[in-house]
Length: 336
Image (tube, rainbow, N blue to C red; front, top):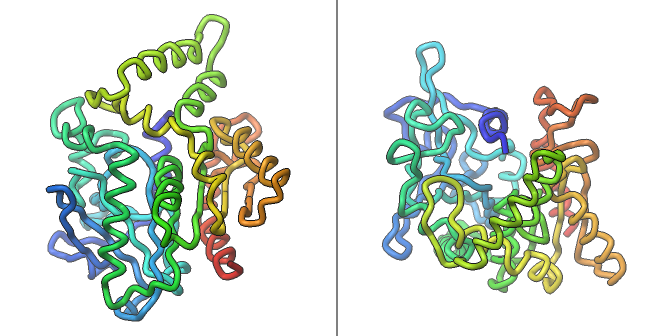
């Protein structure tokens, strides 16, 4: 994946930020809690002046990589911060309190000069933090996020009438398993996820890029053999450990999704080659099985982050569709 290009456009919107400002001064409530000895940072986005108004919780599970929630940068003598959510959260915050959770053992806020070129955080040259690698696991995220949900739902301003869990990319698998194991989830939004798991996405992207002299997919399958043989290994400098890749692959999310009875919205780009065929299969199967709790929304001609492709196959970063996607989520929730 070309993360540098992807992330530079994934973090489009920005807000003014001064070093001595608190989160509340640019629209977020910052909450900390302890989970298994770790400090967990939670940001809450609410409609202005409505943080104490009773509303349901909307938890957004972000995608992969150790990326701080607040990335500061300098512009014309001022400090700014990239948008925390990939979409503008203002429309959803009219009905919900939106929550997003930091990556384990990754700073909440940091200047982009201290990050790698792809906006990831390393605590030494070329290495992600060891404690992050050890916790960068599906089951850790699921249980930690459920602990956060329980903590937030004890707050006087969180309504228990609804609990929406949404996830994008890696976050979609986390969200799906949360909905499967935690019965208080009332609505699931599964966005740009592969229902057949991470390893299938890795192989599928390798197939797209391979040639008769570059057998990337065959190499990926050989690597999967190593992962299966050593599936509890949590050692890695960058990227995912064997245990992380195995956990996000087996069992595949389709196992969770097919057993859920709650309303599920599946959103995906039809040019997202790593997963589109598998989401289409899920769609065909839900029709065959006459499941009425699934809604599918395909964004024609768009890739993993809903940018359209140019005729030559390049991503057209001039057309930003994330806000449209978030608004579609909001409209679906109104009907469900």
